[in-house]
Image (cartoon, rainbow, N blue to C red; front, side, top):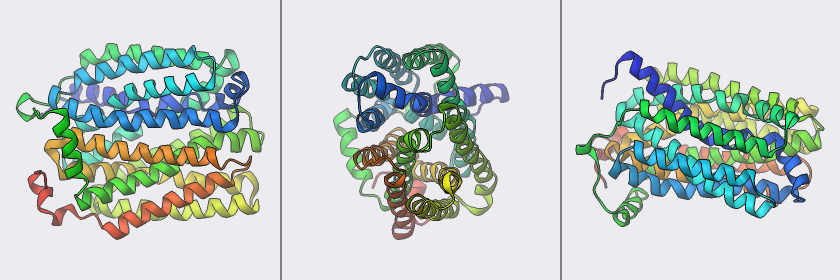
Length: 406
């Protein structure tokens, strides 16, 4: 579906906002995690489960939104998801204990994931091949503004009001995004829609899971996400509680990592047409593993102090620019007519790994950064194994060109 320049920019802005919901839902309240634990009389592990609970909803919800969107189009499911996100955010703001907060975070996540999974599917509706990877890199760069400023804004809100105000701010964001949907065109034509039942769609997931190259792409991105969410769950306590940084200073450190992500996504967008997405994906996985190993040494020995830990963690999260867009674009390119289902399946696997990453950090928390760095390192090894052992190579696979199911 060709778009004019003005419409293309408008669609880019809206898709970037939709993809940012995964980030703003968590990054905005990260500086408030210690304060929330104190206010709700909950321990570190219980508060970190607010991240895991969110990821459970985000992971499972995608499996439903993908087939629904392949059948009904993109806009209506996005609108329904935004309504759930608004309700979940309000529920979080009104929570009086950790258990209810975790539950409402799950509702918030089921709504937010519709925006993210369908924004990716819309990219595949409009672009293919290297252009899809380039567009995803551009979207990730633009939407990185949310996590770039999120912790700092969250820290500012926390300074002026309570942690509950952060979730009321998310309610406002959801309402504004819902209003903007009237400017977003429907990208899935009626003749390209799937009319299979939800039950048949879930059988289709089983078929997708038997496809080797798809598993390679999904595994590489998913293992990386496990490490990323270990980083997200662990760094507030590592930097604020263990290293005694202020929430505002933590926000600045977190923002530095987002700048690294933005930079590598720009580099990826410029190089993908010349070097290929598979090669850049492998480079990203290797770089993330090296950085993760460095962080383990720094956390275990205390070598380099705070800087000795911050630098390798910066390198690890910066690898996002080479891993996330290329793994998703590769997976979507194998089954272009099932973009909603593929996006949902891969996204669910990514955030499912995030559940494990954040949960492991909470489970093994000992008041130091060591458990976080070990979890990051283990997931990084998994990402390397996926790009090495499964060797994604859709150009040699007949389904890559036909887009048919195996």
